[in-house]
Image 1 (cartoon, helix red, strand yellow):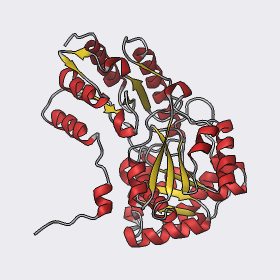
Image 2 (tube, helix red, strand yellow; image 1 turned 120 degrees about the horizontal axis):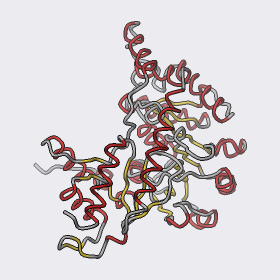
Image 3 (cartoon, helix red, strand yellow; image 1 turned 180 degrees about the vertical axis):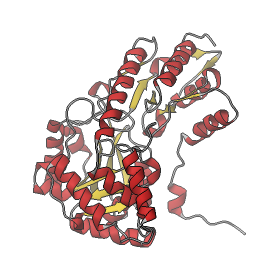
Image 4 (cartoon, one colour; image 1 turned 45 degrees about the vertical axis):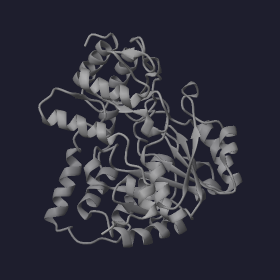
Length: 398
């Protein structure tokens, strides 16, 4: 019998980094001393007060279905967080709690995209944005940025990308993979353009607490018109080291929130009840763990930037947020190394993994050529060892 797969499913590309990641994990499992720079999650434990809140929830039998879009208690805590951090007023009717930030983003595109609608995605981008847009029937439209402009687009470039079919702009700040942060001035100009054209801004600020210079700003703060067009996506994963707890949330106008809630009610029902209870404590309880993580990330970042820029053949910009270095490896491509010529970052990463036992993420999956993403959500010991090996590799010492 012939297997039928839908056109939508066939249009979705697998992650181009999966094969390399699987290879790294198998090497580690086999006892090979590989150093991994691929982690997209904090290497810190979930803070104890959050874990204790989850234990208490289990002991109090908070183990039943909750409302599909999240408990009232968590929605109120999220509203308080927006008021505290950004001065933004939201009611519980504006909040939808989902099974992680990725689920929140999927809900967003399902709620706002008609077949053929265009969604502008600046490149480099997080690998899942285009596929999520395609799953919702939309068309990803890439807006390329350059390293010399800190991987940020100009207002003129954004204007030029907008067409009659444009439904939304994805704005990820701080950025995965570049660590770039849009300034208040940048955001004001983007807000003016979005209001002028009546397009949504899907603001993914999952790394908002990990900004190292200056202050993170939410684009919805620039007036009621842009607030009505802004769909903020956030979650518990990065700020509170809660990646496995799978709690994401959105803040939007009530009509969009209701649409997302309806979609979610049929797709997954409610997020985990215990994780929701723990998230209330995370948002309203002791916030000191964020400062501890941020301080450590700054130390790691500064070491990596200085070290990478001291090695011939590679370089990087200093990121202002998240926990990634986006390393330029263009000088290493198209030239011979160890008897081979590598024409892509993916080929280079594969050889470095084989020879130097260092795992990194090539940039092709992020929509740009010639770069490698390294995470500093790993120990300083691993960082030093990994960079030592990369330098030896470049010097042809393997």
